Length: 127
Image (tube, rainbow, N blue to C red; front, top):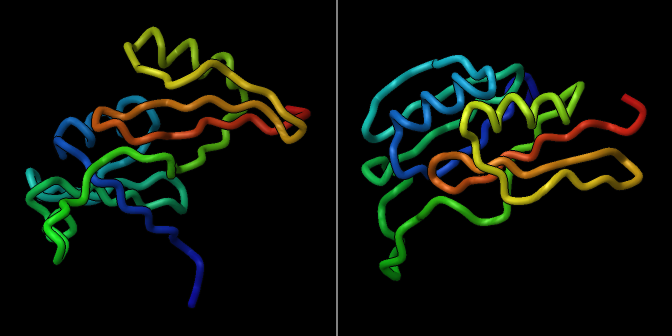
């Protein structure tokens, strides 16, 4: 199976708000918009599936539990200057879960999308 595109699904509360947030703040481009149920956006090799409560992915499970946004899984975006990206996003009103943390591999921070999903911004060590 060729690995040209990586597909990740995020459950979101509001598909239109998610489209605007990902395209405005993180440079994704819109592929399709079937709001309020579904849309997909792309950045490089990442295709992000934005599934609202009315999408087929939002249907209840056999036990009645409904898929919902949030959790600790996240997409991981590499940036060249983490401090500058954080400053830019904070100025635009974006919310963060934590402060920048640094480890042996680099520095990271968790950005929160409008539905509570995380996006990890990561600057590799030595950049």
